[in-house]
Every structure is written in C-alpha cells, then in structure tokens.
Length: 516
Image (cartoon, rainbow, N blue to C red):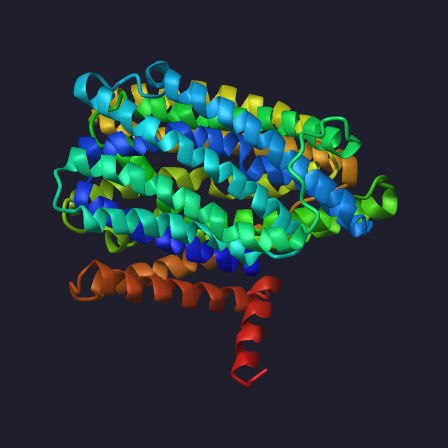
C-alpha cells in the first residue's frame, strides 16, 4: 500500500506534467524532439537505476540487516555508492560526447534542425539522469528498511520542476521552451535525490564512501549487478528499437507513443511495480541461503498471492484501455494543441499496449522472485528471446501493416505496441515455466482469470451505455461519470463472483464506515 501510494502520487503528477506538455506542444515536432531526447539519457537511469539496483543490491543488503549486521550493511551501502559515482561519471561524460552518434541509432528518422535540437536537449539531460541513479541507490536502502513511501513519491518533485518550468516560460516559442524544459528537468533530478538523502543518512549511520571492491558482499552485488544490467540492457534495447522504428512513421508518432505510455505506465507502476518492489525484500529474506521443499512452498504461495493481487487490478486496466481509452485520453490530455483527433490516435496506441499489460506486470513479479533467489541469468536469457521477437514483430507490424491496410504510416505505432505485448507474453510464459521447475506449480487458476475478465467485460458494457446516452458534458465530466461507473460495476461483479481480493477490499471499505 505504501509503495502504491507513493507511486500514485508520482504518477498523478506525471499525468499533470504530460497534460501541461500536451497543452503547449500537442503532437508537434517539438514534442517529438523532447520525447525522443528524454528517452536517450533515460537509458542510463534504467540500465543502472531502480530495477537493477533493487534486484542486485536489496537481496544482499536486506539479508545483512536481517542478520543484524548493521555495520557491514553500512559499509556495503557506501561501497556501492562510490562504485556507482565512478561508473556514472564516466558514462555521462562519454554519453555527452557520443550523443550525435547515439542519435543515428535512436532516432534515425530525425534530420536537419530537428536532429540538431535533439542533440542539444540530450546533452543537457544526460547529467540529470545520471543523478537519478543515485536516487535509485536511496530507494534500495529505504526499501530494505521498509521505508517504502518516500522513495516512490520523490519523483513528484521531478515532475513539479518540469511543470513549473513550462508554466513560467510558456510565452516562449516551442523550440526555445523545450531547451528551458530540459534544464528544469535536470534541476528536478537533483531535488529528487536530495529529498531522499537526509532519511538515508539516518538509516546508514556508518556510511563511508570507499571503493571496497574486495569485500565479499560487494562482489555478490557486483555479480548480480552485471547479470541484471545485461537483462535490463536487453529490455532497454527493446524499447529503443520501438522508438527507432517510430521515428520512421512520420510526425507525431513518437509523441503519441510517449503520451500513451504515460497512461500505460500508471497500472504497471501502481500494481505491477508496487507488488514486485514491496515483495522483493520479503522474498529475499524468505529465500535465505538455501531453498528446501518447505521454503519453496512458502515462496510459491507468496508468489501466487502477489499474482492474484496484480491480476485483480491489471485485468480491468487492460479492458479499460480497449473499451474506454478514448474517454481516458480525452480527459487527461485533450486541451490546447492536443485535439480530439489526437485523442483517438493515442487511444489506438493505448489499446495496442493493453495486449501485453498483464504479461509485463506478471513478468516483473516473476523476475523479482528470480532475483531473490540470486538468479540473474534466467531473466536475462528470456529477455534476449523477447528482444528478438520485439524486433521481428515490431518491424513487420509497424512498417508493413499500414501499407497492407491502406492506412497512414503513423498508424504503425499501434502495431508496434501490440507486437511488443505479444513478445512480452512469450517472455512471461518462459519465466513461469522455469519457475515451476524450481518451486512447483505457480500462477493463477484459469477459472479465476475467467471471472476477472467477465467482471471487467460487464463493467465495460455498463460504462459504455452510460457514455452513449449521457449529454455532451465535456471530456473531464464524461470521464468522471463513465469511469466511476466502470469501477463500481467491476467491484460489484467481483464481489458477486466471490473473488477473494474483491470481497476483501469491499469488506475493508465497509468496515471503514462501521458496517463490517
């Protein structure tokens, strides 16, 4: 709940930031430039940041805390920070120098002034995203001490810095405004790190920044770190393949995918990331140094419980993307330069991303379980398979499908997100099959999944009827009524179908009002 609450705060401000961004830039070339530029240095943050440090650092650090070895844990934290500082400094410097060459790979469709401005924005952003890696170090320490809220709410400051920058310099021409926005983004990165640093220093009283590469615990983290970096690198390459292809689809495709991703990431973060992140320290403690039959049974039960919680919220999220995406997009972003036509285009991309929504969130929890078992090779191997399918399916669906169907090339973005979802399902099934060999049967019963989809389908039908017959009250009021109907209908159906998670939530709500 704390992870989810922190992420919710962050994502809500992220949606506000994206709405302000869409208001001033729409799906213009300037929007394409900033969206593509932000992704390039984000590769650094994603490669060395939250997911990687959580998977490699938390299992070792949390076990030291569980064994009451505070001093050793503090030394480990200081050594990892020092190693990160050295690596990030080198990579940021190389990244700034190599930006023109990186852009040929990341945005091959950008030429002339559009390319030059993108290079400038990337160079401004690179140091800021390096600072975000230190924020991920803070997150690992806070999570290991079960301080979940702050680290996931800290990006609120990052989003707020960007929002205030756009509002303050809104009178500038679009290409100048994105330059100021880049500097505001860097400031937000620094503030996000500093707001976490104070609490971290209290939790690590004996922190010493030393490059202690001989320590056994540092070697354990380093061994896992390299494996996870390679796995995350594959995931990031997959994302960049999608972006590189989207730059070939014409103006607005990159911005459209970025806008859709801001919505798609909300359920992924709130439910997939929240459950996976909060379970990792506990799974690491449960795994210990040896997994026998009893420990395997406990890990399997814990994994299955997490999967049920994820499915309960992700299934209706995917259904909403398919059936109500136009309502969601219009309410969030239809303003100023972002038109109703843009809303329908982003809805189509959002529906495509819904194909793999469940697979990607399930996969996060399975990967966390592998990391708790100190197994980084298995997720890497399956991530490579996912990358291969992403490239092949992405090229075919994005570049060939519009021509076959006689559609403008921009609509290839829909096939791009849908094909990535198919690749995600392949990866998930491989992760589950291998985990079943280690722990025994895992997963959710088909009857449970059928009930969830039935409940979401009935709720979608009810909300569609409300949308169809209600007056034209504008995007925001329409979304408020339609989506509230959807949520109420879904919870009612899950209660009637005796779905455990739904009944538990309803009972908690009624107890809050004294009717338990």
